Length: 138
Image (tube, rainbow, N blue to C red; front, side, top):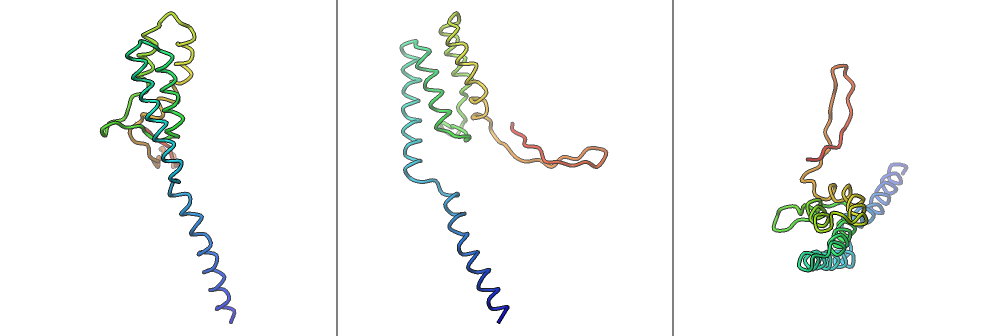
């Protein structure tokens, strides 16, 4: 009888935990649609900034892309978008403007983390036998 109660308790606990794991794995359709529309608008702002030589529009577009990506890579036709190069383009349009340079510098760290190709955990050991995991991106 005790084994039967233990099996029922474990099974109930496991069945109750499965929906929790499933909710975290699948993004909601609303969040996905919002991210897609934000990326579309950001791309349009960057194109507008390039055509009208408006560095503030380019910087605003990059900021929108960073916020919409939420730690993932932004890709176009299978290649990652280099947001750092887009920021360099905005700074080149107005090299004497301190506001543009300062805003681009604040976004640069976040932009570089969005364009890394692959990140993984690596198990590394030194000569003394001390081992640890390192998070490596290239």
